[in-house]
Image (cartoon, one colour):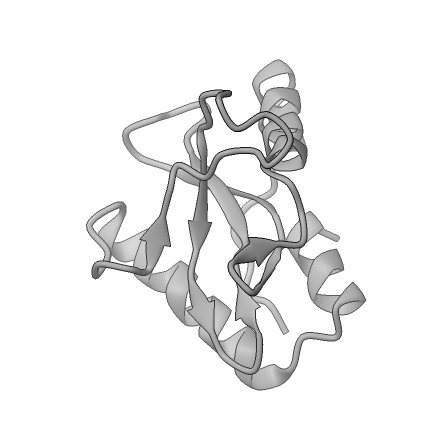
Amino acid sequence: MSRIAAWISKEKIGRREIGQLNQKIDMLEKNGPNLSPGLLAGPVNSKRRPKMVSHILKLRINGDRALRPMLCKGPIDMEREFTMLIGAIEINRNLDTDTEEADAVRSAILIDENLRMPHERYK
């Protein structure tokens, strides 16, 4: 199970929000970084280390909750791919997960690209 699928289960994300997530991922796959303004935001800085340069972006999904799955360009092929890293929810403009966690996943993928999984439709 992918980290995003585990997050969906843990947070009990509903079918409508999962549909919105799948739709945004489809748009990202089709349009790359040329998404409509406001759908992809970043780089998102760490709350713990705000001056640290971040490679982390967030996908903006507004439903019953403000879902903000974190992703990055690449990290293997920086021009042609995005990698979903971890799930997050934004509450009062604050993410419930720090970008350092997403950056740790990104760093692990740079060491072992076999940690990545092919894109899947979430249910």
